[in-house]
Length: 461
Image 1 (tube, helix red, strand yellow):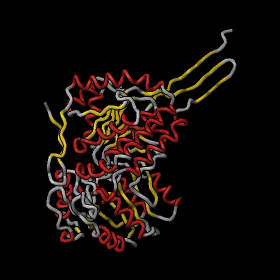
Image 2 (cartoon, rainbow, N blue to C red; image 1 turned 45 degrees about the vertical axis):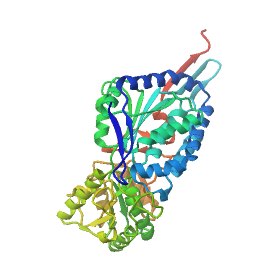
Image 3 (cartoon, rainbow, N blue to C red; image 1 turned 90 degrees about the vertical axis):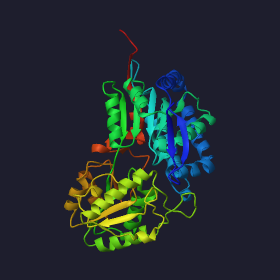
Image 4 (spheres, helix red, strand yellow; image 1 turned 30 degrees about the horizontal axis):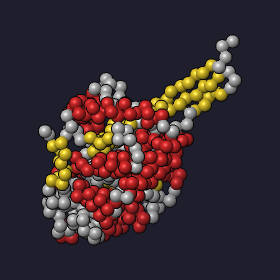
């Protein structure tokens, strides 16, 4: 029997392992989900909403277990208390808009006709969740999918093997029926086989670009709906009128928090020449204040990367950039805990350009490159010189300028004077190789349902 393992970044030990389901066992899970779906969808909307909120509340009660589990699985320091702030914000917001988002669009209601468009659940939704924010990214789809009347099958990344179990445990203890929300452990082959067989009505995948391609290949010809959030190389642009201190604080946090393992983390920064020297100096000082170490230590502010192979990619990108003329400004002596494995010191690079993989390919680590620019036109060209497009962070006091520039940036979200944040009232979406579809907001509900038109003629004469 194939086993799926979570190797802890703390010490390289096997933290958890679970047997992968056979294809037949996985098909049985889907069959139970499909059988349960109609009855779940017939429950009143408010009842479904409240059960989801109770599930979220139950997970909050498990924080003493969940927070250290996250540290063991993917390395985030216990200092930060898990993902409850974003998890709760997203759950509560989608609950608050569910009735309006799912309300029928009434075209006519007269003595002669009723004409309306209703939102109907897809059926069985398959959520394939990532390890970097395993609770927040999963709830983006789980909460609105269940509220809308779908049943959900969750497959979590092997790096966060226990998270799916915890989520399902919390929701079932809160009263969600067991076949309505199920967790599975699957290998890639079984996952692809299920999708290729048209087992699901909608698949939401968050992960790598290559993983997204695998999803599309598996779904080819099945007409299964896909939501894909893939890679990113998100830029920041600091204009000459920016609040320098605020820009440094937010952009450096966005580049390095969670060891840089953020979907919308800042990976490249363009700074107007008038602020460039000061921005670089302050950024290096900001990053140098981290305490790298064991994430179970409450004093640790920067934990290991989730896996030593992820850290290897970051080191290789930095080394390649330095070999081509880049300068690494953070003194490695400040971080003796950097062991050449999963524990990786943060780094700021200058004298970088777009000939370097470090400025083009996803780094997904606590390292960022900073370039000097002379104009909006130069910054715009550099920001758009990417195969990705998730967010862009603009720093200026001029809202009109940010809006004008934002319309020309090839991205899913334009931020002004903030970064690395997911607003549940807005659609979370991307362009180019960052993927397609969108989650959260009213649009997220629309993507997790399909329209059904009712044309009811009351008279025949």
